[in-house]
Length: 388
Image (tube, rainbow, N blue to C red; front, side, top):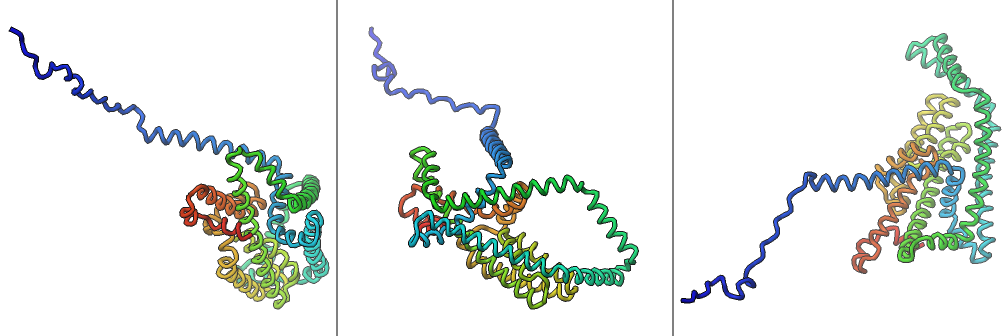
């Protein structure tokens, strides 16, 4: 008797059988979140170390880096003028005339400051003596400070200033600073001339340093960055000019000494957003206090506040809104970080650096999208670059 094959013993039974599914991987001792966090951590540490090393290198080369950065700002501001001059002159002559005009303007401003200060120093000294007497009377009546105590406080302050450093060391440092300033000035002027003369050729050489597949993006990002930088500098010059004119008119009406010099200081300090306006306004108020007394100082303070309010609510949104488009908190934090890392130069370069980085990142994020998506995601800086 032959046993008939069972249902599972047919020749095709092994084809119908389903293979056993692999067992799910057992979780390791380290959670995935911790693994991801560790991978991000060492990458961020590497970026931070590289950034710190770059900052040390730039600090060592500050005598060259700072003039180059200043020349980039001047080039972005003066480039439209050079383009207009090229319609009548050759490129080299156009760049030379632009730099010469810049030197004439800067020299004129310095001449106004030196002439005003040297001519009114005697009157200011006499007014300062009267102002000190008024402050002493106010302290005596308000805080019951006697003349003896006031004199002791002044003597202690003078003694602390004298003990803070040696005159020889201070003089040698001042000499080195003057030499560095002169060298940086000539580097800035030469760099500005060549950036205006052969800027496109220099930038083409920089673009060729990138890989071939990244050159188009690098070239576009450079155009966007230059357009953003130029818009920021030109808007800042216009805002600074309005601030300087307004505060100078107020100082002239109140007969504050060195009114024209105050205007020049306000114009120069306006290139440092937020902080520069406070410092230049404080100079105007202090001069009014020393020369004309507390009433004139309060009126000068009101003039400074009024001008700054017009700047904040009218000029900044109208002129700076499209050229910068950065939140005020980012501006304040950037200035604080820049001043901590590089002093006055860091505070001066903080806002344009943030604006340029923001524009470049937005451009690169929108690069390579479809035409419809590009119209929605195209940053404002690209539109400005096309208009320029």
